Length: 62
Image (tube, rainbow, N blue to C red; front, side, top):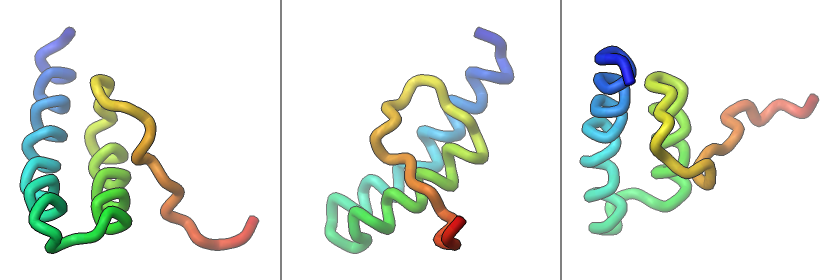
């Protein structure tokens, strides 16, 4: 693993961490968390995460 890839993995986890706490405290909803997670995955492209939270952000009908 390159240093750049490791940095992205760490930034993803560090960026998501406060939102995990907010979700656990009931301050944000599961849907809010999924949207945040999807945005962060787009920014950092982590490889050590499950695919279950990714959702489409474009609500336009195709």
